[in-house]
Structures are given as C-alpha cells and as structure tokens.
Image 1: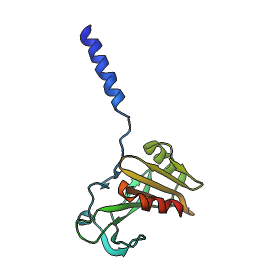
Image 2: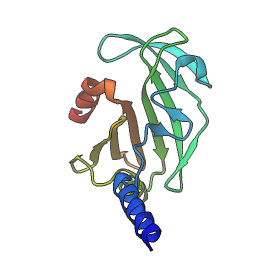
Image 3: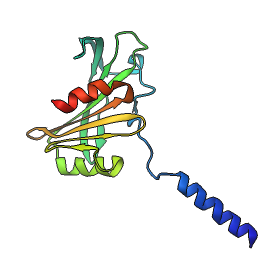
Image 4: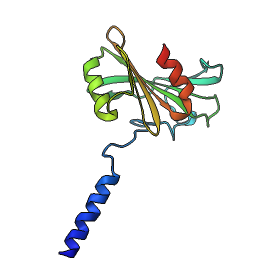
Length: 159
C-alpha cells in the first residue's frame, strides 16, 4: 500500500510539472533555434530588412498543412552568410478559412496576448506569433519570430 501511495504522489508531482502544451519553437521543420540559411531550400535572395540590416529572403520552401489548409512558406534570415539565423518564418494562406486557422492557433497557443479585429498575437518561451486573419480578402498570414526579434514583432503589431 505504501508503494501505491508513493506511486500516486510521484504521478501527481509529475503531472503538476507538465503544463500539457509544449512551447513551440517554430512550425513543422522550421525551428527558430536551429534553422540557418545553409539549411534553407527553395530560392534565396539578399534583401534589406525593415530595420536596415542586410538579410536573406528564401521562398519556394516546402508547403505546410496547418488547420487543414495549405500554407506557402517564406523564410527571412538575419544575414547573408550560411550561418545566418532565421528571424521570421512566414506562412501565407490563399483561400484562407480564417475561422479554421484561428481555431488551430488558439488550440496550439491558447488565448492571444493581444487581439485586434483581424490581428492576434501570442508568445511563449521560444517565439512570438503574429496572425493576420485575414490579411487581405481570402488571404491570411501567420508569422513566427524568435524571441530575439522583439523589436520586429512590436513593429509588425503596429502595421
């Protein structure tokens, strides 16, 4: 009996330590802590980032299915060398069903920390997430940014 009580106590402590939802660090194979320009597929072009930095924009990445919808993936990197780290994972949905996408986001990230009419924002220990639902008629955009990109996250929230 003592062994059973001890087992139950350990199970309860372990359950209390697990929040139940992982802190996402990206989406699918696109991980903000691991992805570098050298690992990007598709086509990459040098670009000027909004804050004046030189960066890279990569498009034509393998698409993802999110909330039952196809998302085109663009990646932005904070430099032009192979070791440049990803600074934004951008998902674009054409023919977006914003209600379905909003449900998927709320299921995986919870209640938005900031919500406006067509824009919602989340954050966890790894990423900022900004969703424009819709961004234009029939289109939605969801952006994942590493926590190091707080200034860009704040800028995008104001657009």
